[in-house]
Length: 190
Image (cartoon, rainbow, N blue to C red):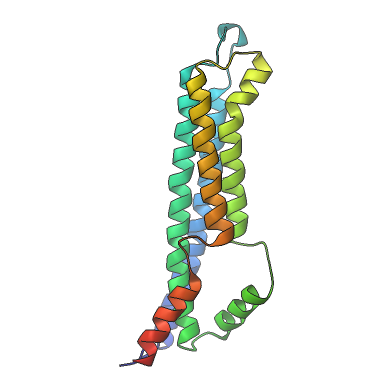
């Protein structure tokens, strides 16, 4: 049995769902910037005289935890993106939206910087600053890199985070629109 396709009420519902997902993605990106700013402000020493020798494990651990929180939020944005693609490819496959057909064609023909890539740039930037913030503190307050294991862990986790964000955001790891389109086509051809 092939897909029945949406009726007019279904189209409205699907379009509302798509708009809601787009808004949620933007909200999560904004929340990420807010959390980042709050944690970074919290990590700056209020009284530089109290910070003596090393940067301390607390700041490394907090930077690592910030990276992990950003990772969770980025993954949530990507899960919403996948759900968004499920809905848009359905509209495309059922011929219910000329816009989705045209938008898909445009994205396949031309490179553009929007939505997922722009959000990925924000998450990438936040991750780089989060991993490098202990370095900035060491330079600004003339501190030692102690404990050094904290610095190493912060750089490794930050580096993995950036690779993950670039892979998903710019190379489409785990979100394959063509695969989703193929699935809807298989259902429609039955």
